[in-house]
Amino acid sequence: MALMVMKDTISNKLREAFTPESLQVVDESHLHEGHAGHRPSGETHFRVYIVSQAFKGKSRVDRHRMINSALAAELSGSVHALAIHAQAPGEG
Image 1 (cartoon, one colour):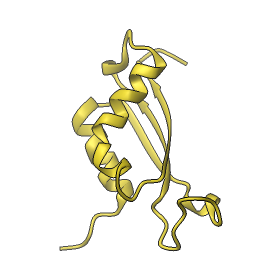
Image 2 (cartoon, one colour):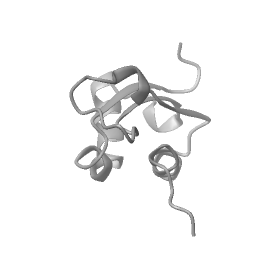
Image 3 (cartoon, one colour):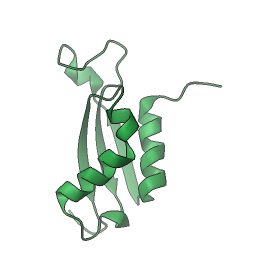
């Protein structure tokens, strides 16, 4: 069985937790070469764009907390940075 890359792990966990209308996970590790937390193998810095009904009525801070909670294992492990763009349907 092939190893799952971190981008797929993040995508799968967010889909399971939030049933998003749209989701894009971008590995930006290559942009952080030489910065803190970067590893030659990559998979350390990610940007998430997610639209989900779960965020309706929630503040930006609450949305970030929800996502950070869903990805707690990854954020305490190999993921060094996560930029989050979370919206409810119809926002933006």
